[in-house]
Image (cartoon, rainbow, N blue to C red; front, side, top):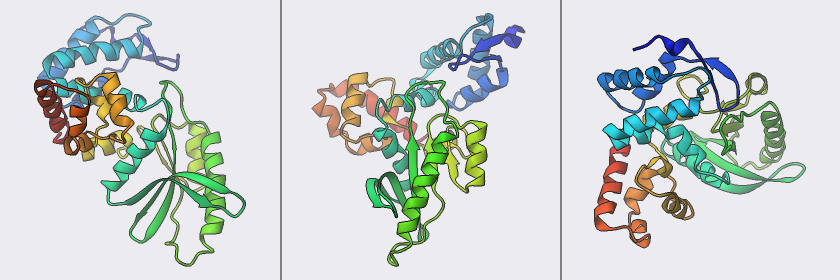
Amino acid sequence: MNTHHTIEIIKSSGQKVMFSLDKLRTSLKHSGADHELVEEILSKVTDELFEGITTNEIYNRAYALLKQHKSVYASKYKLKKAIYELGPTGFPFERFVGAILQYSGYTVNIDIVLNGACVTHEIDVVAEKNEMATVIECKFHNEEGRNCNVKVPLYIHSRYNDVKAHWVTNSNNKPLDKGWVVTNTRFTEDALAYGKCANLYLLSWDYPTNDGLKERIDRLSLYPITVSNLLTNREKQFLLGRNIVLCRQLIKDKFYLDHLGVSTERKAKILNEIKQLCKA
């Protein structure tokens, strides 16, 4: 393996950073690939590095090498991009967040209207667990390189306070826990500082540490259908339009593949790939 991994690379945001071999190794391990395969891919990728290469170019090369060995590895590796593909609207992401919470023991309602003390609010997710209710707002980005700045938790905190002011007037309501802000990207330092100060729960791709979206998805094997290497973009959009967001849902409602006219042989391959992901 060469020593050129000390060169500068360009992130999707345009920021220049030093290439990190450890970060690439960690992301490859998350695909499920064994140590030998991870090191083999690292060797090939680092041999092809050059000054100013983009993170997207590095990703594409590693993804292609994983796919050559096993489709399910490539599917897991593309998780972050697959969540971007839930767009262009944020509604599939809201359903995806709701599904993660359901599998974590919450009772969930999606896209409902709640009264506030001043105005009514369209709330993305209301979840209940252990006799507590939680109001959750989702901020979805379908472009890489865009982070949630402090304006997002500021705005959502004001909405949460308005909802809470009316919520507590109804004695039938369960006690309201802190508000949540969930994003598929990252929060800026100011956003994190405000969330902590305002007692908001912030959940992003990699925050909180070891309990961000990425870790929760891997832990629960709740992969979005957009990770599939075998479904076409048209087929994915068809399924998302029918609220099939998770691979697990497609296993249960596989008749949708018949509606799409998928052949018996290809259907078997798609379901096999998805079942492997759900067992990951």
